[in-house]
Image (cartoon, rainbow, N blue to C red; front, side, top):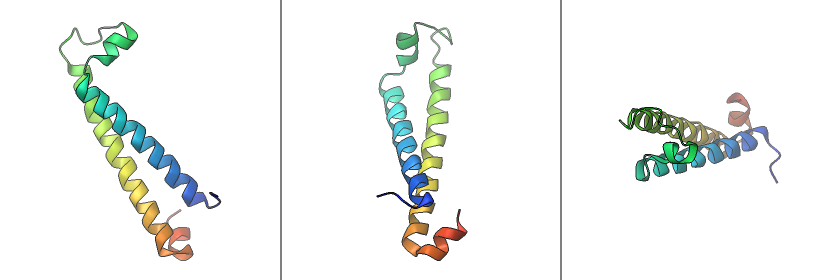
Length: 86
């Protein structure tokens, strides 16, 4: 059971990080999914929107990983460390 606020935050970070990583993989494999899904050509097919999205997704995946790692270490260290990191 999730009863500690740090555990809840860790789960949220893990889910967001996984979603970001999946979106990153989809964008790298299928770069024009935005145009196909929305029916819009935002960058006149030059790929700049997709590469901007890749950069943003790399940053968000790395941030979620770093925050999750920090929270996981705080939970493993015990209640004193977990309280000081919130």
